[in-house]
Amino acid sequence: RTTPPGVNVVIDGSTVGVTSDSVLVLEVARGTVKLGLHKQGFERVLSEETIRRGEVIEVEQVMQRFEMSFIGGGAFEMGDRNGAFSEKPVHTVELDPYYLDRTEVTVGAFRGYDPGYRSVQDDRQPVTDISWTEAEAYCRSVGKRLPSEAEWERACRGARGAQYGYGDRYDISAGRSGQSLGAGPVAVGSYATGHGGLLDLTGNVWEWCSDWYGRDYYKTSPRRNPTGPATGDRRAIRGGAWFSNAAFSKCTHRPGNIRSKRDPSIGFRCAQDLN
Image 1 (cartoon, rainbow, N blue to C red):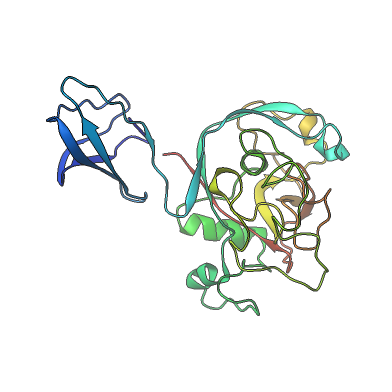
Image 2 (image 1 turned 90 degrees about the vertical axis):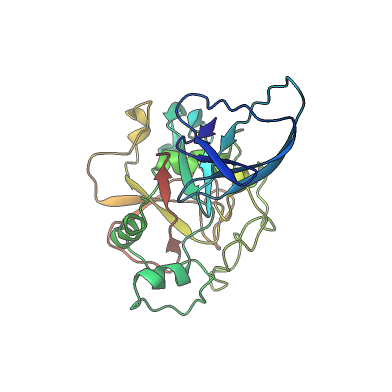
């Protein structure tokens, strides 16, 4: 069984079937077999399985998109009882599964999309000075989209609802924050991996979300797959930047910014639906 379905199953070099929404059942000879799973747009999975006579082995595999992490969705508590007004009230949100880029989009990747883009940062640093419209257009160009605030927060907090992308305690050695204003961002992936295999969700640069910003939106937010107010004059940003303090770096902190405004401290990463 694979998530998503439609994955080619290869045993000892031969394709033997394709997974569907139900279980794909295969009968193989006893002994050690080489199992391969592959689907266009996803990372290939290779393993070895040893089969004994009469034994049934169940294989469940979540396929990972290239340079993205799978987020299982489900219910989580969004907001912070001890946070700012815009982070209250704490409420339950249910999300469909999705994928999220493991890193912020880099200067090099964005320049491949827009050769005219100019930056003093090197190719491995996060792209900045990008408006919300430009960020959304880039994501669409690669078959993705900007994440919603709820998707971004769920990914940052991890399955256990942590305060930061790396844990519950603010730690400037675990993410690029608490620096001087002139220090600037660093290359993506310069710090240890956080929740779900994601990098730099706390600090480095602020990240655009798809939502219009509503300071009191949590009072009326729907339970399932919230996407923010219908209209507004600002877009939400999340995650803090290299100069952010402990409060502004929290996964729950949610300021807004003018939709068309470019800023050297704002970048983005993309999300993608499961199917």
